[in-house]
Amino acid sequence: MKYKIIVFISYLLFSSIVNAATLEKILEKGFIEFAVYDNFPPFSYKGDDGKVKGVDVDLGKAIAEELGVQAGFRLFLADESVDDDLRNMVWKGHYLAGAPADVMLHVPYDPNFAQANDKVAFIQPYYKELLAFAINTYRIRSAKDLQVFIDEPIGAETASLSSEYLLGAYSGQLRENVKHYTTVSDAAKGMVDKEVSAVMASRSELEYSLGNYDHDFVITKLPTPGLSIDGWELGAGVKAESTKLAKKINSIIGGLKQSGKVEAIFKTYGLNYKEPSSSKMIIINE
Image 1 (cartoon, rainbow, N blue to C red):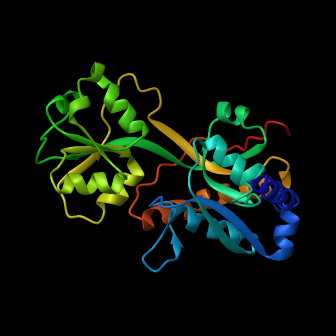
Image 2: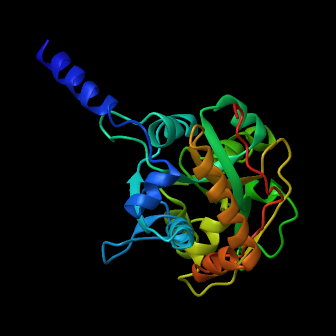
Image 3: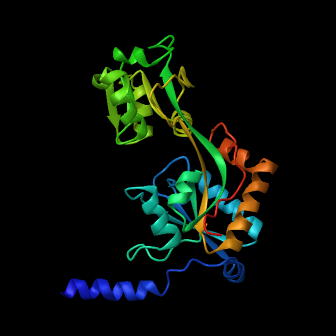
């Protein structure tokens, strides 16, 4: 009973602060808070100096500069689904994590996904992510398809789309040669240490993870039969009710893409920039 009372009191205290700031309030207080994923290089992570850095952090700072305010960042751990992350960080909040942030970055941009999350305004995407393969060309001189991994070991991050796909590809023929790692960076190091001949992951994580090594590796695309999604666009999300804020951020991101600022941020982290095809904002219940 005591635990229930504490939770109920926490809920009462929290329920009074669940609304993220409007554009007017952000400009008035001179501060905007961005929610970014924790321990997610090269997009958002703490450096050796303890400071938050990464592509999404630099993008947040650029947005704040355009608004004429200071930027703050809330690192959070991914929940079971992106829907949960949007609920906790954008439109409702969490009794432990607090009220929603003003903006969440690294949000999947997809009309069907937006329909299922109508309490979120989806800002135009700033990047298109692709699944790719890093291949040790010394171990594998040429790879036209994945059948080479029936005999050669390949790495993937545990519980990832890449892992799920590789385990089932070619009716499970690759399963015995799929080696799992905690992170893409660990998998990349595994390839450097010759534990595996290749790694499947998002192109940006592969480029960043291998950028610290001298190597004879190539990052490329390979046919992935049966995989319906091999790329996705990433944008930002704000509470659907914050229409003015959504439109302002949407305009700013569009301008940052056009000016080349977004591409320059990606290059800072050794990434090749892939511009998304979409340039519109999605608000289902506007």
